[in-house]
Length: 508
Image 1 (tube, rainbow, N blue to C red):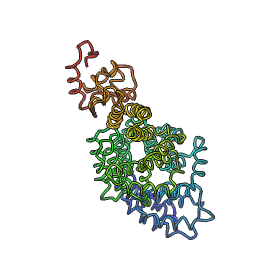
Image 2 (cartoon, rainbow, N blue to C red):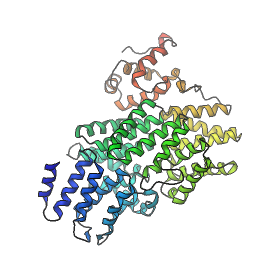
Image 3 (cartoon, one colour):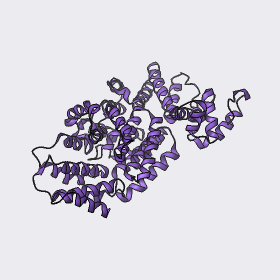
Image 4 (tube, rainbow, N blue to C red):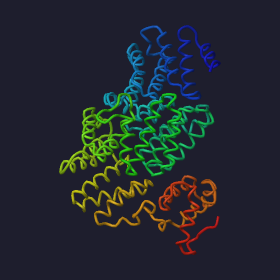
């Protein structure tokens, strides 16, 4: 880093020199350094304070410094770190640039500040496909993360990845992969997420980009949690936590808590789920400058209700209603109404669930929508409205099966059986989808994978893309009652003991 600082100082003289140096050093600390957010914060705030006042809003070095400082503050998720940034922005003249205002409103404390900036963000996204500057694309996508607009940034982000192959813009490519991976989780494209996060993890490791690596771990942990892979969830969240605690990287810690809360909810460990959800934001409030809390509204309320904390659950619903977060996105509108329904009784609960599911545009979030349908189906079954319950439970079950969300599928299947309808081979978690339902193609892929072949080699042998192979594997794992490739051999051996010999289709 000393050479980097010296090079930066020589790049410009006078008062601008320290600012250029501070931005360069902060990027080093955030990306290829140790992720030392506090040191990066001190460097940037000190260099900004040295500039002539009022600050020149047209100076690209100043705006780069402010963006970088916002990134530092977002990573820390500590309200006090935002105060020097807010003071600096207030000193910009002739006015705060729209893109700077947009970023500050949407990544700092979006529960309180994002609604006023959504029109500006939507306008920026509308022109993103024609945006030639990849940095502006990344900054717009960053602003879209917590307000659920990443899907509209996909085309521009993919262009960055495609163009990045021929340039030295590794950082932009890695950030693009982060945002695409986050969108893949929301959209239920979890196999694609696995491929993108693995690609990003390898590239990050090659360049020692530790901070970005944590975001890939977070997305993979969410998928593992939703699919009931307890060992993988624990390993990924432990890795995140061990790295983040000494560096005080709050976004990594809240991300780890998010994944652990989701895993515990799916498997019925509601006390544990409540503990992890409230570690992100206490019940009855949306923690200041912790935007991850917007992803855990329904998680916290459901865990509270399931553990008999109805007062805390109702308080949290009141807090999110008063914050007005339902106006931010269709997803938040749906989850706020569903969370309210969980705390209501009788006809009011049914009305709230109906309102949640009638929110336009929520098909973009299939996993979250299926969770709402499951909760509604459970409510209807308890209210002895079995016919209506079956519709919602069957729909939820189909979605969970498609996603490979095994514990959630088991829960939906159990509720469906309780209404008097068969849910197929769903008696226990291990045969939620049933090994007998393996297709011939899935048997081939399973046998080749168990023999140690990579997805690429399997695809070449069977004339499939590696992505298609990955999709088949994630679909067949729940059918065999396993969660990883390592368990394939034993699962197939057990299956063969109960299957006629003529079902064997390939010999690795």
